[in-house]
Image (cartoon, rainbow, N blue to C red):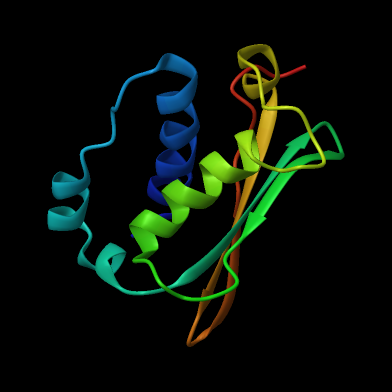
Length: 117
């Protein structure tokens, strides 16, 4: 599975909240990428420029990779107590860093902002 699929899931998770509608087709993702069913911990870090804008990290492994990405993306954007909830204008310029903590080690992927400055 490519890193772009994982980052797309993270972006879509935030968009669901901003747009007020569910758009992630979980069953289709799980059918095409069975590894998303595996329990894995993640961390999502949002950046605006070079500054952290929100972070959420799994402390106790309880969710599948798919559900953990969705949960941490939303939590980083809207529930980090150090920041106000993310607004659309910030989201468009945000970079998302996704770190996966797997039995084989740590993997990190980073997106580009939707709108480049």
